[in-house]
Image 1 (cartoon, rainbow, N blue to C red):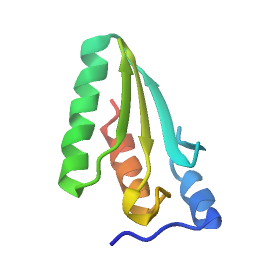
Image 2 (image 1 turned 30 degrees about the vertical axis):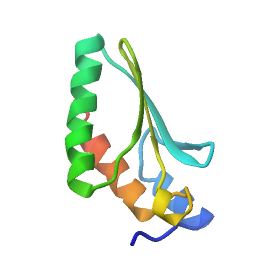
Image 3 (image 1 turned 90 degrees about the horizontal axis):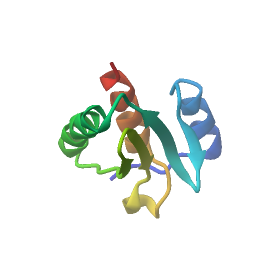
Image 4 (image 1 turned 60 degrees about the horizontal axis):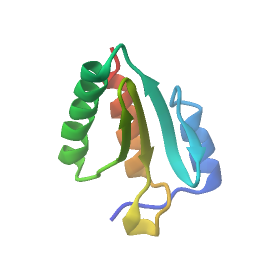
Length: 95
């Protein structure tokens, strides 16, 4: 079972997560790609990593834009260490 992070833990994690912020109680990041295929291809890579963690992000995709929000439902829709781990993996997938 994942552990809910404190506000201090979240701020510490954000200092190490380039591009991520907290929006509406979720880890949040927006991306812009060259086109739809690049955005969707990246989303597919993220989906494979997320599935391996059994932790599934909220995706919003319009043409070359992708927004990813991460929150853990098992800890009351709060940010957990699982969200931070997935955000790190997502950042490593960037070209």
